[in-house]
Amino acid sequence: MIPDLVPVSLTPVTVVPNTVNTMTATIENQGNKDSTSFNVSLLVDGIVVDTQTVTSLESENSTNVDFHWTLDGTANSYTLTVNVDPENAVNEGNESNNTLTALVGTLEHHHHHH
Image (cartoon, rainbow, N blue to C red):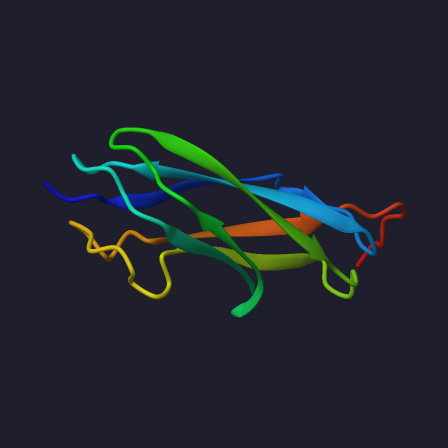
């Protein structure tokens, strides 16, 4: 009997520069035991921009975690990583599926042609 926390999705796929964007990660507990409290971090190009705490996650259930991120818009796309339980506070059945990486593009008001 052991929990297994897995990030399964991150939305939206486009973000708006110079404003606070809400990024929503969906986390599933694919194990057969309820999870205790754990943190979830959002990394942008490898740097943590927000961390939220999930108090518990029941077995075979999922939860949504909202992160807040303000980007400067200097890049056309960013690599976002959701890292579940970065401190390994929860003993899991599979520690290798705790990250989800997504490529997120910026929504520009004008298009540049290269």
